[in-house]
Structure formats: C-alpha cells, structure tokens
Length: 313
Image (cartoon, rainbow, N blue to C red; front, top):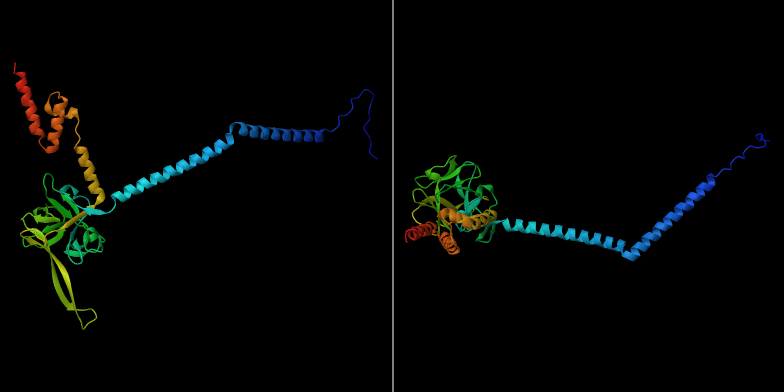
C-alpha cells in the first residue's frame, strides 16, 4: 500500500490540483467572448448596415473597375482600328510611310521589284474585285518607302531591298542603286482619278496590258493571257499613266493632326512678327491672312500704317 507523507501539526495543507478547473474556466470565458463579439457584430450591422454597405460597396467598386477597364480596352481597340489599314493618298503630304502604286488592270496590279532590282507589275490579291480603293499589299516586294527631297515636290522611292526606283534614258525601270540621283527622283502629279509619276526627263511611268500566248503546262494546248508591262517613256498622262497611291492610314492621320497644329498661332507670336502690340481687330486680320497665305503682306500693311500714324501729327 502507498505510504503517505508525514504530516505535522501546524503544516499547511497541500493545494488541490486546479488544472481542470482552470481549463473549464478558460473554455467558458472564450465561449462568452465569442458570443459577445458575435452579438456586437450583429447589432452593429443591424443598426448601421456596415456589413451590407461594405459588401455592396466592394461589389460596386469591382463592377466600376471592370467597366473602366472594358471602356479603356474598347477605346484602345477603336484607336487601333482607326489607324489600321490602307487609304488613298490625296495630297503630297500623304505620301509618307510605306506606299503602293496600284494600277487598274484586269486583274489589278501594282508596281513591284524583286531582290535583284527587276521592276515588274505584281498582281494584287487583297482587293475587293477591281476596286483599287480597297487594295492592300500581300507581298513585301510591292511596298515602297518614299523619301521627299527637301523644299521640293520630288520623291525617291526605296524598295524592300534598300535600293531606289530609277528610270533610264530609254524608259527602262530598275531598282539597283543605293543612292539617290536625278534618275531616282520622281514628281507625283495629281489628276482627277489618281497620280502620274514624272521623272526628271519629264516623262511619265506607264503600264500597258499586252496579250501573250504560249503552250500550256499540260502540253498540247495553247493558253492565252495578259501581262502588264511597266515603263517610263510616256509623254503625257492618260489611263495607262494613272496610278493610285495608297499608304497606311496612321501616316495620313498624323499629317492631318500636324496640319491642324500648324494652323494655330498665338497673339504673342503675331506681335513678335509685327514688332508691335496688336489690338483684337489686327490679330483677327493677321490670323485670316495666315490661313490664306498672305501673312507677310498683312504684316507689311500694319507696319506701314504704324509709320503713317507716327508722323501724322
């Protein structure tokens, strides 16, 4: 049998184990705290609508963010679509960036060159029927990069292989030269239906459809077709000398925006040009003269009027 420890009179009684009691008290306290927190949360939500407003606000915020992102994506896609594709060049300022020279043959063709510099007429595949206003290149050999000669209406056109289009004295076209010279310079001449391309000898590029015949690949048969020959020896502009120049839309849009910015001029700039302070009527006259291309004449009139007023008394 177990031996009890000795006890003497006056000794303190040993404390009983309270671990189980403390555990029960802790569990009871935790339960009470959780219940109190739940009741407070429920009463607060019922009184102020905090949880409902927070959740609804979060959902509304997410919806608004999604709508904003969707709108931004839509705007970006519209901008991309607006600047995508090819359009006709209507002025000399539109001839920039990659361009093609389309000709109204059957089927439609365009000016092209191979890696050896041979210039030929290439059939256009990306075109709606025979409508040249929808033509787009499908081969890099059909694309030319224009370079405008400063302070002139002359252009040089570089092929995909880095060499310039040229026309010799007998009208033969080639693209074998690395540098620009007189034979590599062309003047686009606007017509009612398109453009004429004039070289420095004042002759025009032309395209002519010629019928050809020969043995078919299967043998025993004769195939009849047409080939387009391109030369640079025409004396005037007609149907065969009319080309449709098409470029990328984003370059044409850029030209329009730059032109719009150039039309604006401030009052201070006009006063600097005139060398004096201007009233509202004079500013209006000068801006109108600038739009009409007669700014220098209007400035001269204002200066002369100032001299007359100075010595009038």
